[in-house]
Image (cartoon, rainbow, N blue to C red; front, side):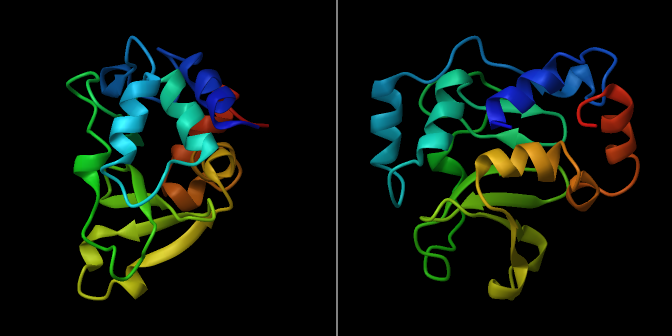
Length: 169
């Protein structure tokens, strides 16, 4: 399932679903073409098509457990993509950090579209702090964050809450 569809499904469970409504921020509009083009000049490479689609739908979005960064002028609660890049380009060239979790993990898309989790608490060993979590942005949201492997994204009652809300079968 596409990331946008999954996120829309999760948003449809508000206010009783797995997300705390007070921790959700949905921008009034998506990113404009000019904003995307300007932001790409500040990044190590162009955005992938899926990442671009997500930003054009919502210019960043805070979903309680996952915060997706926006571009240019967006809601004040949304972090800006170009300002949220870690200084890991030497170890991981072409990565774009596009999201973070309250647990201290950031999520980056490499130049092949593969999504990596990076533990910001393990900065002493950059290579050991990173691991592959999804094949692309769609897989990241549909399987890892809000799907069958959501217990790997967040331990505890996250997966049961998603199941109870009917986010995935």
